Image (spheres, helix red, strand yellow):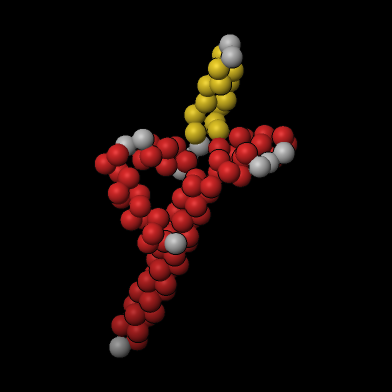
Length: 101
């Protein structure tokens, strides 16, 4: 009987860890989507140093080629950018956004 109780405590602990991880994940997804939605307005109303910090946060390996900025978006914002450019995914993005807000 003791063995079953120990297994039950172990499973309850694992369940709690997974539940916490799910909550943390959904919170992070909601934050990323919210920031992605508002970043242009935030950027436009920011001072030069704040704009630099935003770009450093969002961009990976930025380089200037002539007069053109070349960059890669940092994860997970690269995925948001890919989803935004694909009309088939926009409905899914809207569902996710409204689910977490």
